Image 1 (cartoon, rainbow, N blue to C red):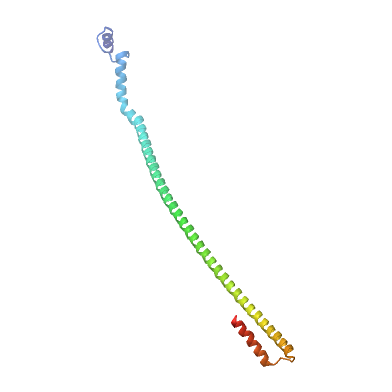
Image 2: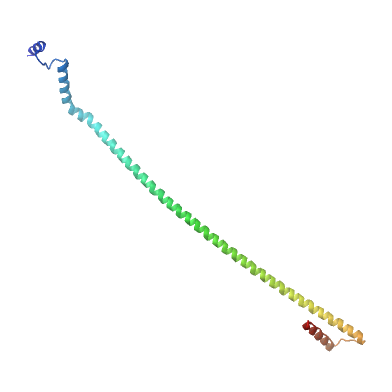
Length: 179
């Protein structure tokens, strides 16, 4: 039969599938391809498709993780900015309170210094008044002694009695009140 097919092909009488020239070769290539296609799909294309699907899954997970990390970082940044704002507000409040305490303490120190200065002035006035009284008293005593001495020289006798001394002291005291 093969010979009759060969004759028929040579005589130009039809298609010979065993002839590996143009049409026969193409037919066998197509048949072999179709027979091998399920095996190739299972052995070659399956792992490639699975690998690509896994790669896509990993990429999707990585993108999701990156988005989550970005969201978390933004959330943390917002919290830090809020805390920084709170810290700045607290620092400003503390500075204000410290300034107020400092001003209050300054006023207290100034008031205390004024009070101390006034007390020192009063003590000084009192000391001056006391010294003045003592000096005037000493001067009066001296005036009494001089007056008694002068009176004794005028009268040519000793004027030294207690009554004379009292009389001259009263006279000097009256003179002081009359000034």
